[in-house]
Every structure is written in structure tokens, then in C-alpha cells.
Length: 389
Image (cartoon, rainbow, N blue to C red):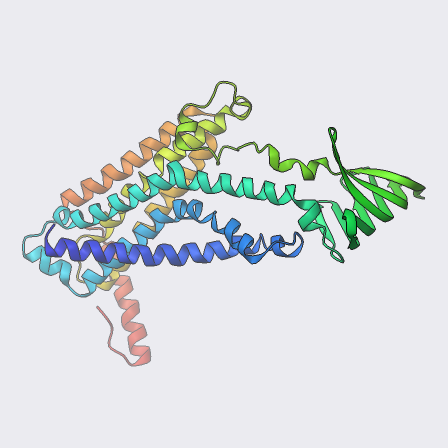
């Protein structure tokens, strides 16, 4: 790799890293804010919050990397064009395909990163999130039920205790259970203790009353009790048996799932779609790089031509990615959709390489360019400034 290649290679990867970190950070913040209830309603520390939300970063990088590479290549080519370096290299005998070499090397680095994340890092992070979440929920009776705090254990189940007393006794218990759409149960008890048995975990309440509001009835049913067992097994035992979803499977587990895998038997189409998505993930950087360079790699002398090419490359990449998402959805029911996605990627890479080898220059039609120049001249006269070529 010559000095020019190293310069372009370093510039592209540096731009890629900057764009990747910026985009990932912004999207991660929006995703992390959705999990802020870990610190509020579930009594977790900020370290737990950052740990769980941070594990989703590899999955974000998997999606953002090809886009960040496209932006990095566009930035590098625009910088070279603005400084007239592309024109100088072309005059010195550099063909467009020869100029593509350092961008190809940078794309290989990005593709290797994406392949590693798709095969191992992203699913490993997702399964750690699921296990961690299960452990938090499994520890609900000791960590989440804090005195004076309304804890939302489930979507429609809220529990509050007034205080904790010696011996594991919880005093002043209030339970609002709306999980059954046909009825709503409100329980108030003087105290309660957690009892674990072979049938599960129960919150045994003492000296209280239960109100049951049934749908369609005007008045609630009121029951006073001396002892009442409220089933907490769903929350206290959840961490012992975690069923991995499709996104939590490593690549080799998607290639050869066990024959007795209940999830695979239930949704084999989703396994197939996820497998092809993981395989195609490192191919997208090559397609994006080829299309971006095909539109922007040729030497140009006018700003309008560069802007038109940038717009064309964005549309081509965006259209390819959206078509890929659509094929991924359809691949759940139709294996042919995955084949179409492979064909689209091969066509995009082939078309890009053909444009690079043939020296095709993507420029706006002369009529459109003339219209743009006239409008620029009118705007320049209006503001009393010379028009830019």
C-alpha cells in the first residue's frame, strides 16, 4: 500500500469511526431513555442501568456500520474533490478503479467488524440483557419492593409496602392487580411475609381486605381475610429458566439448531430470515462502498455535478437498504425473498464495479444543469455576489 493509499485508508477509517460513534451515541441515548424505569420503578443502580442499556450497542453498530461507511467514503471523496486531488491523481495516471483500492481495504475492515458482531457479539449482548433482566425480576422481592415506593412488577400489577420489619416481615401492603381485563383486584393488608414452597413463591398477607371489581357489575365484592396467599411465582422464579429468542442465538446456532428446539419448531421461518440477515450483514458494506464510489469517484469540476452525484448515491443506497428490509420481512414466509436479496446485493456490487471500471461519470442532464446555473446566477445578482461554478 503506497503513501496515497495509506492516506486515503486512514482518512476513510477515521471518518468512519467518528460517524459511527456519533450516530451510535445518539441512537443509544434514545434507546436508553426507554429503560430509565430500571432506576425508578425497579430500584436499580445507575451501573445496572448503564450495563444493560450498553449491551445493546453491538446490535446498533451492526445496523449503523454500512451507513457510517457510506458517509465516510462520501466525505473522503468530497474532500479529495474539493482540494482537486482527484483531478491531480487522474492526471497522474490513477484510474478510478486504482483509486478505489484504499476504499476497498477500508471496506474489508468494516466488513470483518460487522461479521464478528453479527456472528457473536450482538447475540451475546442480547442474551446477556435477557439473563440480566431475568435476574433483576427474580430478585424482585428483595430489591424492587422498597418501603414507600410504588413498584410496577408487571404491566398492570403495582405493589407498595410501608416498611420492612425484622424477620422479613413487610408492613402496610397495598396491591393493585389489573392483569385480568374482566376484573380488578385491590388488596390492603397489615403485614405479609414471603413463603417459598415446592409450588412456588407466595406473599402471605395477614389481617386485610380484598376488593374485586368485576366488569359489568356496579358494586365491588369486599372480602375481609385473616390470611391470604398472593402468588409471586412468576416473579421470583423467572431467572432460573431463560428461553433464548432468535436474536439471542449465535450464528452457528442458527445454521444448525437442535431438532428438539421449541422456538425453532414454532417459528422456523424467522430462524431462516435471521440467518440470512446475519450472513448478508458483512456484504452490505461492499455494496454501499461500490455504489458510493461509482457515483462520487470520478473527477468533476463543478459543484452542481458533485451535489447531483451525492444525491444519487444516497437514493441508491437508501433504496437498496429499504428493499433489503422488505425482503427480510418476506423471507419469514418465503425462502425466495432471501434469494432476491442476495441477487440485489450482487447486482448492486456488480453495477458499481462496472461503473468504476468503465469510468462512468454520473452528472445531471445538460438542461437541468443549465437551469441550476441560471437560478444560481439570479440568486447571486439578487444578493450582489458572483455566482459559484
